[in-house]
Length: 586
Image 1 (cartoon, helix red, strand yellow):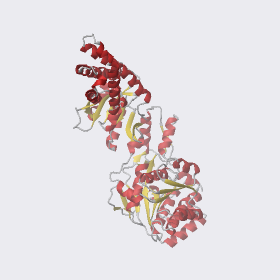
Image 2 (cartoon, one colour):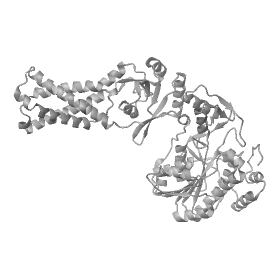
Image 3 (tube, helix red, strand yellow):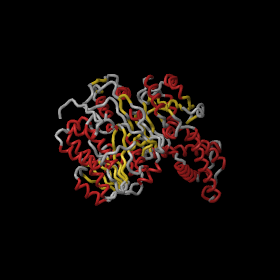
Image 4 (cartoon, one colour):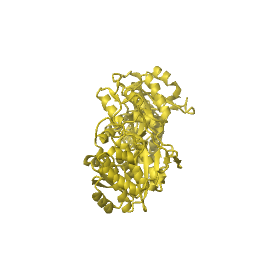
């Protein structure tokens, strides 16, 4: 992270500036009088020196000259120096005419000579660092190519970096051949030539690029042997650099995100979020905070996760509730005490192999937990409930997916009274706990082979923040009874994901090992069953046609499921499309 200029660095420049000001003023006096200064002029020399020096330091600070990294001194900084000097000498001359007895005698030509001398020597002192860097073949500074003539690029030129910016390119033809901080902007298409000619060793991308262009750039740079690729982003009003990750290459950024609609939905509301300590739940907490929620009721059965996410909530009132959604009595007390207006149900067991090995616990937590949250919301007149679902609920091949399909059926068919109940179905989110990305990262860092279950396995992916914003947007437009489906883009082959992560790590000693499909694992996921989807006003969100199921029968079926000795068969009875793929005995 880049920090502001330190006070030590500022004091260093002020200290040396005083010596420069003293030297240039003394030289100006000597030049004016041919190195024979009259004693009458020498008497007030130090008064003039102190006053003009203070004025210059004040205006240097005003024009932020002491905040500039002079390694990249350019025309912009030279203009600031000129303006600061003109302002300082102009104010001095005004002071002289107002209080002549303090400064007299003084010659205008002395001030004019001193102005030019000060400009030259102060400028040379600043630019010397850049001249030294360019002249010294310092191998500790990586020659870096900037992609994008943006505000982030401008900031990088003014910061102390551990790299040397040797070239800049842009895909905007209107900018090509113009100058940016004394560097000529070149064509993005000429990267290969620039990397070779400039001996570029790293790249910083300083503008937002669409996924297709970013992926294309990554492939081109990879072929050139450039693995040090960073993105410039704004975080807490600072420009920071983050390494390019596979999440950046696979990210699905919705084009039609309606932030005004989300803010209208969330602002000043009391919102209860279950599973608040999980990957999705914690991000939903942050999003609700960002969009102006009045209060967050954060429910989770993990003390550690709840504490961790609560430490990051600074701008919203929170209540931390450590309980399980399967305890209806405690849940009912929570609803009655806090009276939430919006409920987002993100609590669930989601890891396929674990639920396969713990069928009863998976059924009880996912189905009964969801039923409890929905029933409590209805009884306590919650305005809107959003249930998070998964693409694994579509033609499920595992117990987890079947339980989530039953949750969808319950949400669609329960008698809602005045509560608007909607479900949101989407695929994998990048970086969530237990997903392939953290697993692959760990394997690569430890020098292990990356394990992929099958060469042809594919998955849909979306970034957690974007998925959560679309969840809130779906909640905002829902009127009750909808099963919303988020546009996940094109499916990604997991083996390609593994290859990209290995390439980004810069390691060529990591292999890929195929270990076979896990119990209940599909080769590919779907987002629709046979429901004909209906478009909304937003391209990123569609609605699946509802599936009718008698709610009284569904309640009886759920009770029988809990009591049944053969839970798989009962799941198949409730969800006929459930095709269980299991190779271990329950």
